[in-house]
Length: 235
Image 1 (cartoon, rainbow, N blue to C red):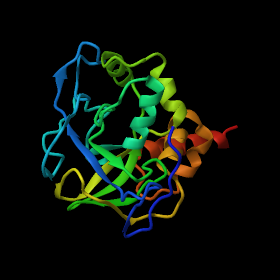
Image 2: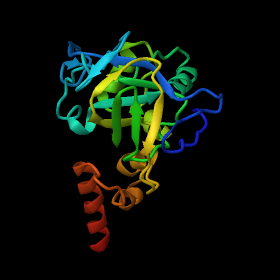
Image 3: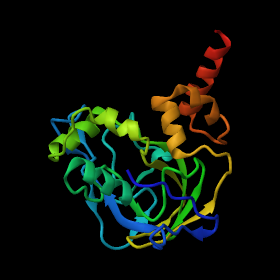
Image 4: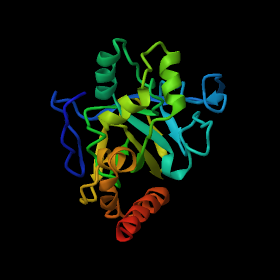
């Protein structure tokens, strides 16, 4: 998987090791489609790249299928780094195109997994805040197999890397498009990154207490972390 890149200084567009300023390489949307391989028989994971400016109230043209696990204010869009797509392409032996992992925003030049939960990004006219993490599911695994990738033990393989990409909430409406710079305008400073949150929720429960340092932590994660802390007191 790609090397970790440092987060940018608040108020400046991030610059990767290759000197490229952090920016969007693809904006991807999808609507529910029949999908026999999906858990509920339909899915919106099959995304199409959009050319030109996209109005964002919610992401215009994007719609979730499984409202139990996706969508809502705290999961308005999903971001994934092009660097991570490229690394998975090497592992899978096939090119992984932007949008292939169901992400809405494909980024380049910023390590989205080392960004802190609660960080705020200005992208074009739109202001986003990192809220949560993607957890791999059966539909994600089945989609990889449907696309011709090696989906064997996919959920475990994806989880082991702990580079899931973040969900973001919309703070300021506007328009965005491919090529827009990504500027980190706020870092909360608590040190809980996207990768840390994923590990705590999926692979290493001993990290759960750390999540309680995140202001405005999404309710389901806060409940999980508090439940774990309570269970320690009962031992």
